[in-house]
Image 1 (cartoon, one colour):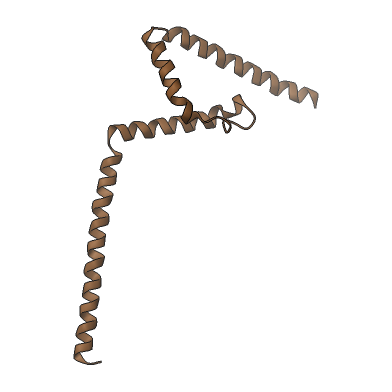
Image 2 (cartoon, rainbow, N blue to C red):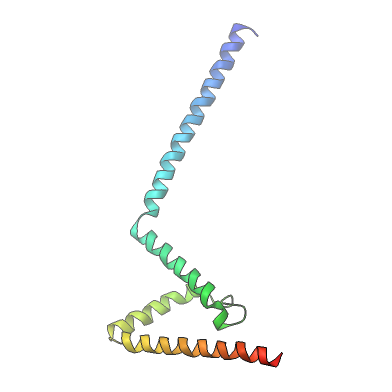
Length: 123
């Protein structure tokens, strides 16, 4: 290799390293912006709501139907549930609503327990 070819190769390698450094710096700035956006209160609340909906689907899915909540889109129903919940809170019906939910939960648990023990007796 001649000296000119070596210097051209060295210059090309230097330019490649400079471009990689620029790309790395751009990625770092982009990652900082994404983290800053993810730490905004509205994004945090949205993440909490999505996590709660997923938890409710996984825990309560077996109670409502054999296939879980697959036929029902809970994210679509959430605005209506929030509207109803805020109405009940404005009308100060929180305690009766809580009692009704507790009674429904006890009834569902009793029915499930009865179904489970009835299935073993038939076999």
